[in-house]
Image 1 (cartoon, rainbow, N blue to C red):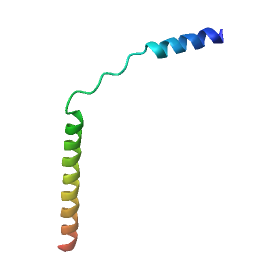
Image 2 (image 1 turned 45 degrees about the vertical axis):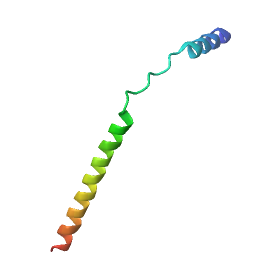
Image 3 (image 1 turned 180 degrees about the vertical axis):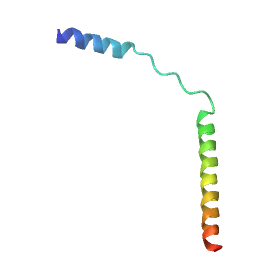
Length: 55
């Protein structure tokens, strides 16, 4: 029985379909979103630092 299950597993592995590639420019869009979020965090941190020094 274990031989048959191993053969089935190997067959499934051999016949599996490759994942389709992501759409074009996906990486660029992700990087842009991360850049915007990072810029916002920097601005928020600067505002917080400024409000602490204004007291």
